[in-house]
Length: 284
Image: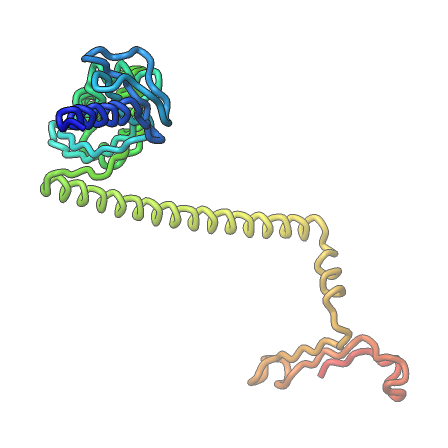
């Protein structure tokens, strides 16, 4: 065979092989394909999987539709004009319906040109309304409000799933001042607690004393209105033993002889002492 024909035949086979390899494409999971033919973008995206296209003149650009995470530093100022450096992490996703528009407007990567500046702007607007101390204390509130404002600014073309405030950095002097203030607030709260505890204890003692005084007053009125109440209480508390009272003048009183007076019971139980039965108590 003529060598020229062999070379031509080989070239034809090579072209066919290249055309075959260029006429197919694969869109990976989590991506959508944008078809570009001689610089013209198709309005319909390609789903994930295997497909065919025009060789040499058409290529498929894969655009991710799964959630992406990107770090983002931000420098802002508080309402008291303190510089606050914040490190963010933005979680976002490209909806299927926006794949072609994102490629046309932002070359398939909208973070640097669309998301980052709007999130930074939203954060600056939120922090400008809070003092540096409140930004540190209310970081969850700052995050939530920044997320709402960022979503408004980005619009529906992208989905800003979440914003994470990884780190908030203040100047060393400001951090020291805030820490000192927090210590003072804790000490003041402790002092208030101690004072409230002492006040409660004092109020309890007063209430207890008033209760005891009222009880004494009630008993005094009861004794005054019922003279026999004392005798009744003595009888109720008597243990059955004869009372014994010893008294008198140790050295002897004028008109009397010295010694002890003994109060004997009015009567003895039957059978206890036959010789003294029926005798009255004697005083010596």
